[in-house]
Image (tube, rainbow, N blue to C red; front, side, top):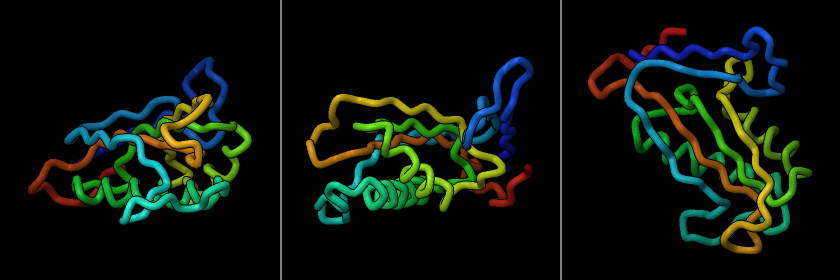
Length: 141
């Protein structure tokens, strides 16, 4: 069984806006490589549209997590690489559609000069702690 603890406002630290300052738990560590807005055939989704790209990125993250026996409930850390911080509201909207906003993962956002293709606007990686195989899928919160 996986038990995650989310600390949104540690003593002496300003509360995070949409993220927890610390998350910890027990279980199997899952690292998901940075995902970009590619469809199943490798075509870029949403050229010039940060909201469409963010939705595709979170769908790719969901698929990777599922393949590892995890879900967004198991995510403890998201790292955002964006070509323009002005895209963050669209990215947060896509994020909030898939995570428990009352228990958000820890997060970091970094503005980068470019990603590996000029059409890409965002890349997101995830770390999760999932139940060990064979354990009950019930979550303790």
